[in-house]
Image (cartoon, rainbow, N blue to C red):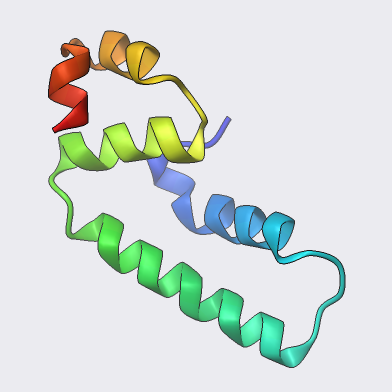
Amino acid sequence: QASPGNFDDSMVAFLDMIAGPGKTPSRSAIRHEAVAAVQNAMSNLPEDYRQAVWMIYIEGQSVEAAALKMGRSERAIHR
């Protein structure tokens, strides 16, 4: 399972999956730019936000599960 520590590899795999079949130079450039933008955005988040975003949007966990693992209320996760 992915973790914030190997975000680069996970994001590249995710973008490869949604990019569809075929590898072209333009797709590669777009994927690289998208990974860089997501990495930048994630790095600017406070750790708790980063962890919640990671668990919900990358790992696909429910808000309820993420809140439970983080020891927070669901409402706190939604903020």
